[in-house]
Amino acid sequence: MTRDLAWQFDLAWALADLHLCALTEDDFLWEPAALVWTVRPDADGVWRPDWADNEPDPIPVPTIAWLTWHIDFWWSTVIDHLTGKPPRERDAITWPGDGAAAVERLRALAQRWRDVLTDLDPAAPSKFPWGAGTSYTAMHTALWVNVELTKNIAEIGQLRLLRSADFG
Image (cartoon, rainbow, N blue to C red; front, side, top):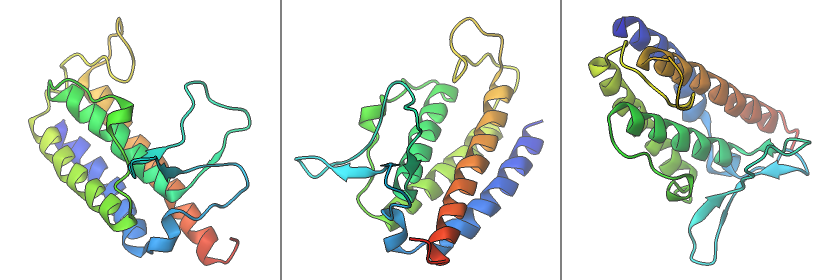
């Protein structure tokens, strides 16, 4: 079954690669609307994401930088969970400060994810991202990761297309 998960991931990653290869440095921090979530350097120069514990209404439009951080955050956390490592806290995962480094992080996570899929026991219990007390498996989590990646990359692609069409 993990072969099918790997196939699904490779399909999602092909879409990711299409958009990630086409990004320019200026694309990452482009703000497509007045209400955005982005990444900003703190007083120490560490790039931190905008965040709210409760989803705001209206929902801010994310920048590509924020989306690359978001993928880095949830993917790293899932990999930690599925490989038995203590999951990192959200604040421990920061944006690297430039788009090329963000893309390299995603490429490294993609390779790590392939490794995880190779060793995955699909029937193993998995509480992430579902929460304790659920009956979901590692297979459910892996399927969710592939879909979540596809969604986030589609958002990046849409922002890239809007920016290149000179809507910014």
